[in-house]
Length: 217
Image 1 (cartoon, one colour):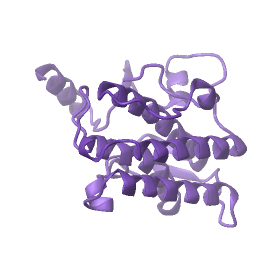
Image 2: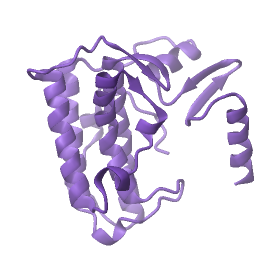
Image 3: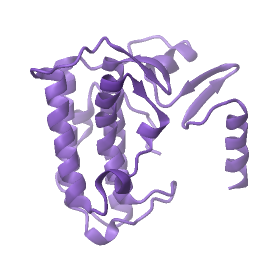
């Protein structure tokens, strides 16, 4: 714990308030950002970025599966905390669903802040359970589909001011998708830790074409 505090103090001294973060010499990449990490380490090869049709397909697969999985979790596991991070399972499930919502909000307001990545389920939905978070996840999916392929579809080339630097709406929607994929993989692992078996979990084939960290935690 003391080492973690020291590490955070060092980051704060450099003006960095977000984790995860990758630092190489004087260069900094905040968050899991495949494009910027490839530049940082001078990596060759294509970094997957979903086109609109793929993004629509994958968002449908992932968020439908997420809502279905939330409904499989017993209500008394809401306050369960994962070993590697002090965050309740209820908050985790909300966070999984909320990143795409915040990407769409950033398009409307032009900014994606640290507040957006840390919203709490209590502040946004109130005193709820897994069913209400599942419904929220389904609502987010409806708005994602409308934003990407509806009458009010967004301009994916619009540049947004984010805590990771300037990003296009396309990049933020793609990062939101990867974020939800990484977290649903973690959710399956958490369920295993609790002695629960997910019903009809997604497989690696469902995740093809989406950039996510290679390490689960």
